[in-house]
Image (tube, rainbow, N blue to C red; front, side):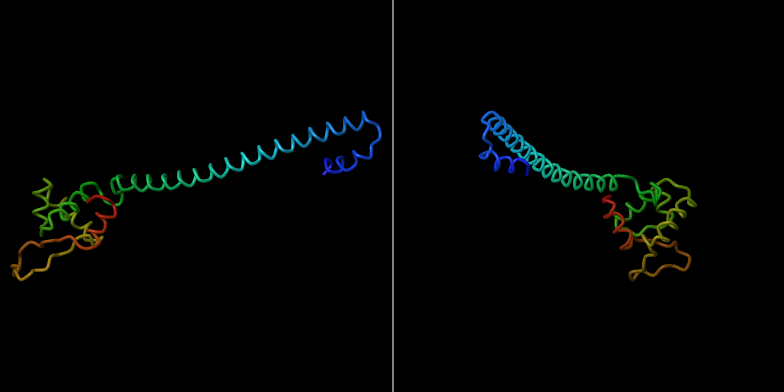
Length: 158
């Protein structure tokens, strides 16, 4: 604003020395203003670029966090329980507590513990007879259920 005022007043100044000095000052001020505008434009462009880079890095961070979570062992289940669930998932077989104890070299009570945990979470359930009559005192057989399959898939384990 001061520069515009000076430019308007300069033609009316009679003293040549003062007029030249003021003209030179106006020119310098205009150059400084133009330089400042160019610097501001560069800063704006850098800000836009940095904002875009931040968005890309946030997306990348989210993706990497999801990958890390998939690779981490499940904290809600013991590692051994997850292995048993994975066995049900991969084999699609009917298994009893005794089968689990043998396959994973566990004490029967420990196998029963893991079965209990998986049943409480509804990851496995008692297998239906599928046309094969079970004897009255036959062991219970278990099979993986939809929530168990979902758990394995969502955790990226299978």
